[in-house]
Amino acid sequence: PLVLGTAFVDTTNDGVARAGEGVAGISVKLTHVSGFSLTTTTNAVGAFGFEVYSKGTWTLTLDGKASQVVVGDDNVKVDLVSGAVRTY
Image 1 (cartoon, helix red, strand yellow):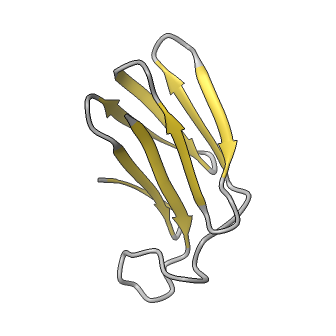
Image 2 (cartoon, rainbow, N blue to C red):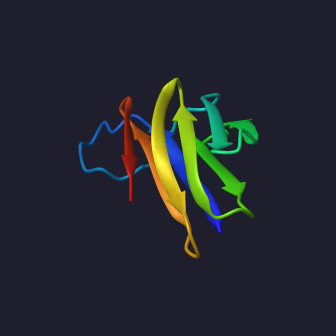
């Protein structure tokens, strides 16, 4: 499964990443309870993604803000919306 999302400033206040709202260069780190971690930065439109091979509890840190995510059989979407982490 994938852990993926977008960092954006919601200028339209609709909760949806629209053209021009993405924030590039945000630091993203995904850490498993075992200590194993992956890092990346958001791309030009604010998107990021990790392919995860180990199910379980992970900590996703976006721009210094941490959130627990549980990876099972389905993809997990986590966005950084105007500075707040949202998990879907």
